[in-house]
Length: 386
Ligand SMILES: Cc1cc2nc3c(=O)[nH]c(=O)nc-3n(C[C@H](O)[C@H](O)[C@H](O)COP(=O)(O)O)c2cc1C
Image 1 (cartoon, helix red, strand yellow):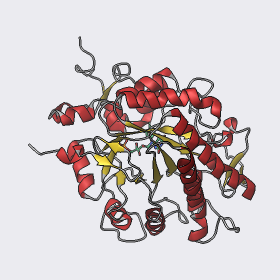
Image 2 (cartoon, rainbow, N blue to C red):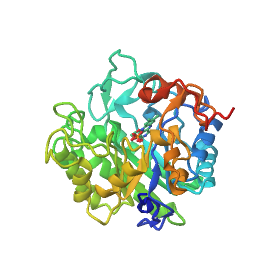
Image 3 (spheres, rainbow, N blue to C red):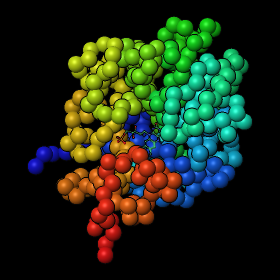
Image 4 (tube, helix red, strand yellow):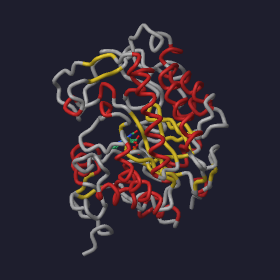
């Protein structure tokens, strides 16, 4: 039998935060906050169960400022009244023995107009791409002023302070998946002619300013080890969008930041680039190579088996994040560790919601389109004992 011990090597990050293994709960929005945007009991139950095996658990993304809210049912971290809600989330994750990392963002032009008084903002007035989460009606987008950009940078810092006060072990800056930070990096969505746009150097100014402010807050407020990670997406499909060439320049800039980790958001961990750079080798290999050995890399994307996870390590990742695999089987990590990987569930029956501790709105989206190909009619006997 293949040994999966490489997945269970402990690790101490640059900041001093120690984790028990190389497996990570991928950040996953559950659309299930309470009506006042506090973390709900359903989300606490969902995340506590999935934090019992992994080393690091990344929360669903939260917004740092009111007009950064991106989804229906997204919990907030934009003011100090959120502290109790955030404390309960950190405690739920830590109860399972994982390190708790709050993922923080501003949705930019992906914000839903109804949540931001119809004042949708971005680097430039470029509309968001189509999404199953938004209506098809075009949304007017306004370019942020320089003062607003500075204020949002400070908001990332203040949310980091709240994460520290709430007992988290770190924050992950969400620079991926087309949200505000990526909107600044991308030449497609950033058409600014001031210092925040134009050359790649200028387009990287916003993420680097956010990193600098978050680091400053950590240095000022954290009493013990507190980690800082950064998630990015390597490519965008549209013509003027990000290419692997841009992505590798971003990776180089991140390498110089002495982060605890860099997290590449991939839909397929072994996928090859679309354009720009070497099309033969996987994105993961090229990114790992450019990042070097001093900063660990988290990979994600279509990892369902421990063999997949090992392959991601072989391609250059130091950690592997599991998204849908942990939704469909919350005990994935424990099963692999106990030599029971043959028992991992990778399909979903229409009766599994409660047995899997999945919040109702997340369940609806999963069965609606996110794992449609994995739905079976048969109830799973392990989850639904007679
Ligand atoms: C239900 C769901 C919610 C997600 N929410 C987030 C999120 O809040 N932040 C984020 O960076 N990525 C989010 N993602 C992307 C995942 O973190 C991950 O990158 C993606 O699902 C690919 O990994 P997988 O194939 O293991 O599921 C979400 C994915 C799913 C399925």
